Length: 255
Length: 229
Image (cartoon, rainbow over all chains, first blue to last red; front, top):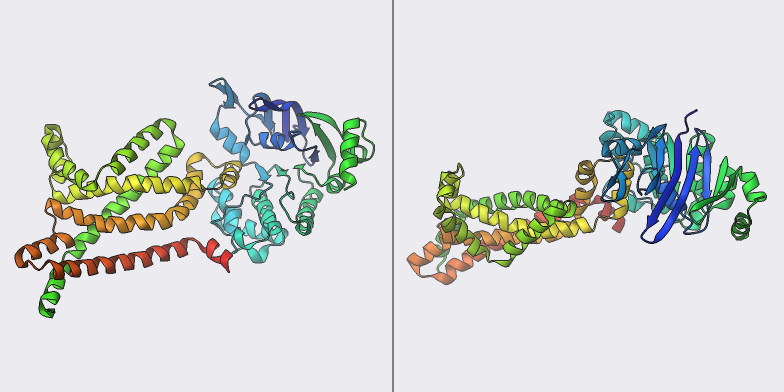
């Protein structure tokens, strides 16, 4: 079966700092992959490469079997076809660490914006679907509120509804709870857990080890821009083969 | 106090208000559209950035009065200008004044909008890109709506400046508020009363305008209003 997301040999550098050193990764439909690793290991950059929010210097990205066409522009790699990139981006849902809601729009407007203006779906249909999604993340009564009126947890749940409204083939979470007060983490993790139970394809970059161990079907430990170890979470979190993985897990589970 | 003279003067001056408002309305509207185009061009296209910088530098660096003179007296000296389809407009002081006011306010406006564009949070733009928005849509739906809201208080200032700047149009024979005031003074030599009357009318216009801008600000920013409660 065609993998939902296929990355192969991804390299990315920021100036002299080589952040990703040839990472390959396939996510099949229904997989929930947690990506863990120390700060600076490249896990967020890897996730951001999938919808081309970062452009890798080398390697290939395929979404739903369609490979992103690249070209060389002034000696640097760049997407060859902006339309293709936009179309593929619209087929994914991305949830940011800092929510990144549009402050001038209400919760409902945030959720229907891309379905109506990017995917050109009928407004009434988008609103009906958005209301169902807000119900699902527990924010039905906040539909007319503005982001500034919401708590961090409510903002992140809005952002998840916004990502779901794209009817994405995969959801990408970039440290979705790192910017939240500790007492608000639970409500967001609960929503993500429900989505995993629905069998959605998800990639989650996270520092919540217990959550990652519990929710994912596969865990990937990234170290210094490369995949150090990957496998079923039961093995990665309880019996890792790599010393680096073991040290990292021990440090994080003891906190 | 000669109340008969004052009320007579007021009546005559008020006849010039429509012209003043017309000049201000047309030039600030056209100027605002031009300002947005200039600011976006400067932000989005590297080659255009130098043109916009030059434009802003020249138009902010020279007096508006000089710009009005240059357009009204200067343009007609070029034979090819007289041959264009624009000449029926450019030979009239009215359109010359509007052109000068428009390109002048566009220079200031472009700088105000540029400030607004810089204050758009990078995360909001990134969320739009991640949703698959093409650049034009991103500007129309996310970047400009946020930038314009940020720029509005400063832009209100510019609009008020423009209303008062329309008084310079009297220098190319236009009988707007100030033009009428000069002509009454040249007949009556009663500068104090006439200018006080004219000043009062400008004050009233400015007062209404500041309230209107504040109203638009409130209307466009329910998200800020809500967060303060």
